[in-house]
Image 1: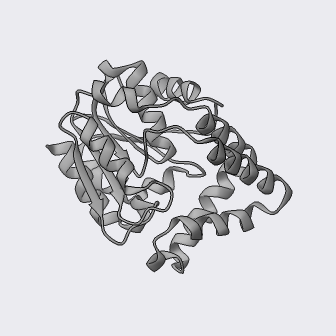
Image 2: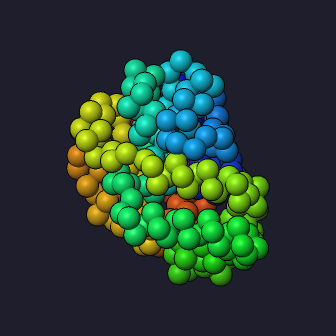
Length: 230
């Protein structure tokens, strides 16, 4: 069985993949990478590669997708399959970087919990914005990562390279998955990635925002099982 490495997104812990770990466990050993150290994508990728099996299937959500693409650039021979969830290949615009820095500044000044509650509501599908279970998970994860973790992850995201030139080099079975109503990653970004990666499969989840693994866990589980067993 192929080992599976999952990479969480910004302000996320292993809990973002809790439904997927349970579903994927029969398919092979599952590891959720730690993304709390390092201030560049290279730092994060190198740390994960140092702990990962010699060859593995790799899935990342949001920021985790950025790291997954960096891992592919650094060690493609070690990646057996690739899944890019709720993510994109394009770099930040200056405006987006400024917004990220402003969020970090606000988190330093205000209570992190208040910032997290506002951020969570803005990234979920409208049907899920009042879900107390999702709110509690995102608050718990964000408080665990903390303000300094947010600052480090934000620096890595702002400094990430343009991954669009990387996409045609991906030669392993690849899943591109997105919500149909992701307010942070426009649908066309996923469509472009899937069209550029040779043989990639695109899955668009209905009634789903940015937190796909938690908003639509059963659908994500099925897509990942199809990906790992295909």
